[in-house]
Image (cartoon, rainbow, N blue to C red; front, top):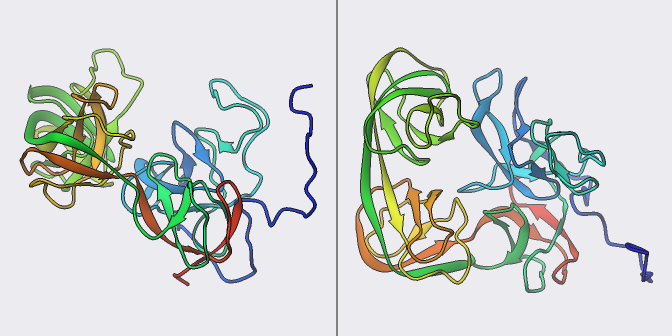
Length: 322
């Protein structure tokens, strides 16, 4: 029989990942009405998450939560029995897993507190080690330094675009493209435009819209109000991989090496599958000629281990920020 129990533990588990491991103080991410909803890929419980401007709440703060991102995570997803055993179309999340489906409310996103976290690293966690969040998944490992991968003979070239667009709240609608292509991470400017970055293109595409061209785009500043089409310019970097990295490069990876500008984050896969010759948009357009570039795969959080735990085991953690 598939899934039949095959072992019995002598001692009960230390705890369940995502639960509080103490009654100490904690605080949550501030969110207004309409905020903190799961993004298109859903959100993993008992993992770190990032809040973005794909939607906004009633206070015009970012409102969409994803289990991937760049920079420090916005918080940790507490286990509140909010994942589902029922799959509702069109969601494809397997029933009974630990995912909050797209569009569903996130119960609480904690910025501090003591939690049980699963060690998803390859080495044993020790008390005092920093909890690192994997940029691609939000899952946790423990250690004292970032995990990195590299690519030889890689380059970054400066890119620009010029379009005619209107802006309403956090949505830029492009009606005409004069030059270039539009990708996540691009910094935009124009008459009446609040300086910000492209977060991503709104999908599914409507009739007449094209990828990286005419269409609607999320931007990283709300309360935009440009009702008449204006010329909007954008700048970003185009990263081209030389040698294939040993580990896939996640969106959000920090880029260093060569003459790459600082800070520089990977924001969108443009072509290829992540191997040699693949291209990505990055949010810094400082030119870097052929060089070995290093990519961080995770980011340090404000949490540290408070107990030991082998890979796959739960670990007590505490946040260093009260």
